[in-house]
Image (cartoon, rainbow, N blue to C red; front, side):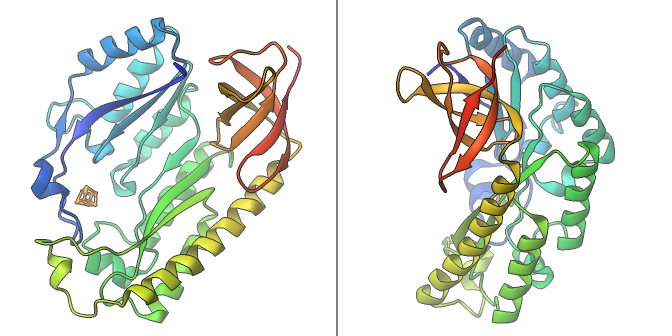
Length: 293
Ligand code: SF4
């Protein structure tokens, strides 16, 4: 629909998470040159795209091999004519410094919605996963981001359940952590063994039925949190980028906080950004109405 474009700016990863094949399959972190990214973005802006999602395998590593940095890239992207909104793909939380957070919050085109990779909210499981942060450190980054946006930020994440050795108590610790972070959306995955990774030979592999049951429990909890957060937004206004027309005056789109909406916008067109009031939530999308002006 020429409204939102995805640009891959980084590939590969220097980390060694116990369950992941990417470092072996894709090699070390490599960054695309900023000039090439900006040239593509200028072409997209000229073609009518209003929103860009910067993505990468380990996005905050952007520039570590070239002397650039992700926040500098975001600031440069914000200067491209026609591009009104910038979003970021998945972020490793421990790579965001206080300075990054302050600079990101100062960039008004950057939507205040962050996908911070979690994987588990259980400290012991994170260690076995060989993740490089603790749950407490993760929570601190979320708190700092929330504070930088005066509370008006949203968070999404990925969680793996049924990692080898994850006990019922570990899983409950992870669930409680996820509930406390008040994520707008959680993608829950059952652990899937990848040949050649350390975790594939860890003891304590869980039966598929138990993993499926944990996926259901966590997803149900996360969906309830999502409904509560979105319910609390009803009546509020937010900017929506009109995307796919559902009828002559109804469009799909997302708010800056990444709430999916079906917005009534008579006379609107895909690619237009309107201010809309959120009216109701059907479990999939908010109904919203564009406000005059
Ligand atoms: S899970 Fe992410 S951070 Fe960990 S090794 Fe894989 S790509 Fe890198």
